[in-house]
Length: 181
Ligand SMILES: Cc1cc2nc3c(=O)[nH]c(=O)nc-3n(C[C@H](O)[C@H](O)[C@H](O)COP(=O)(O)O)c2cc1C
Image (cartoon, rainbow, N blue to C red; front, side):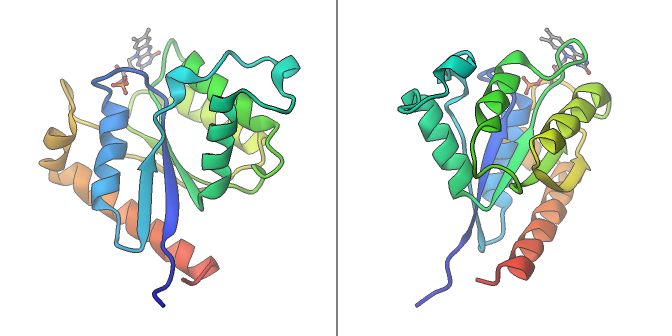
């Protein structure tokens, strides 16, 4: 019987259809080594506004699906834009829904900053995730070229693909080290 794959869940902090952060994560999916299967979470816009009063069973279905996806993977890959020196509200909302998930603490995270300029939201994300007891395994900056950044354009940019491949290889090796397939 073949060894199981390691599984990663990609979380983009952007709701934009033409999001560069989402494009980068889509590219990561296609560049991931054969031992690492990446899935892109697509439910960000469907999450209700976080309210602790609603954090009771049964959870809203979209929240239950988010928690199941986040708990069921080996690692989270996160790439988010910066809005007004902060984490986009929609993405902070997602993270708030994960705070109360009993299985979240210890979750490995790869944090990707797709902009060399956006350092404040990135630092805030680190702080939030650390407070949530996530394990930040890798924290990388892969600055994207200016202008429209769709997956095809990024795939043709050797600087981006080299950085992404290196990050994914390091991640796959670490997953193999702690949990041999
Ligand atoms: C409302 C708004 C506020 C922004 N604020 C910042 C900011 O404070 N710092 C920054 O570096 N970029 C800022 N940006 C630029 C976005 O972070 C940037 O365009 C990013 O690439 C968008 O990510 P996306 O393509 O994944 O949607 C802002 C963009 C918007 C729409």
